[in-house]
Structures are given as structure tokens and as C-alpha cells.
Image 1 (cartoon, helix red, strand yellow):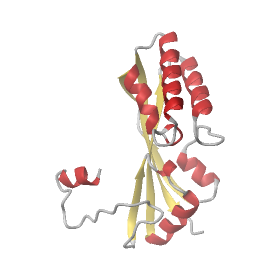
Image 2: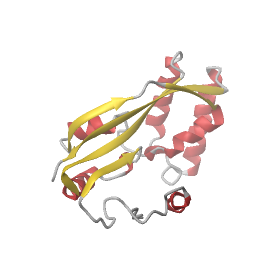
Image 3: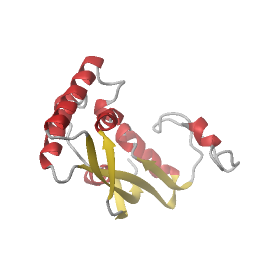
Image 4: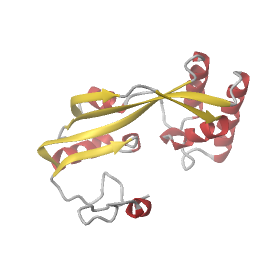
Length: 186
């Protein structure tokens, strides 16, 4: 991803310093006025990372998070219920449940929220096969974490759910939420 980013217009600008490594351990050069995370914070160890970011920010600096809210087939609530049951059954994360990272961070006392905004939903139509594949970008269903036989069983079950409900494609209503706040030191 970094190689691709460097090829993009401005990706080789001398003011950009590309860091590769786990956020919990990567070498930093603080202070930072803004630290961002887009759909990635759920992969990280919050108890290690958030205090680290708190000390890397300027006194007025903030952490900004982008969170996508994807509602499949709003006219078919049974589809969402079926998906959630499959995720709970196959997830490699103990006690998985749906959650909003910003809300969970605040609930755990790891951040002080400052503000948020949310877009209007955009409608996207995704072929069923692509939709099923997208679930493997989630932490609990990732290819590297889910055994191949379990991944195949999850895929078959979700394809079956979609077929049973008459979906050869899925209408998604997608919103982006942007949240900003201050991580708290340990």
C-alpha cells in the first residue's frame, strides 16, 4: 500500500514520511497536530496505542477516525439478522458483537470526544460474490485468521442466505462517520 501511495500524485513529496510497522511500535517523530485512522483501529491494541498517541499529539492535537456504516438491503431486515448470526458463529474474536469504535473508545475511557459528523447514505449495488468476499477484510473473519475450511463454510452459508432471500446482488446504504477527539494518557 505504501508503494502505491508513493506513486500517487504528491506521494513522493518531501514533507511526507512513510512509516511501515504496527502502530503500537512504529517509530514516531512527534509532535503531531492530527493523527488519523480510517477503518483500521479495530485491528490495533487500544490499551497500548491510545496512550502512545496521546503523548505524540500537540497540546491541541486530535485523533480523527473514519468509520463506515454499511446497512445491507434496508428493506430486508432478516438479511442483517442472518449476517450477524453468521458473523457471531464464525468470528475468530471471542464474544464478537457489532460496535462503533469511537463509542467503544469513549465507553472505555480511552478518549475524550470533541465532535463528529456523518454523511447522508449513498446507495451502492454490489454483486453477491463481491459482498461475501468483503467480509474477509474484517478482523474476526480475515483470511489469515479464519481457517480455510471455516472460511469456505462461512462463504457458503452467506451465499445461501443471500440466495434464499433472492439476492444476486446486495443494495448497500453506506454512510461515513468522522469522529475526532483526544486520546487520554494511560
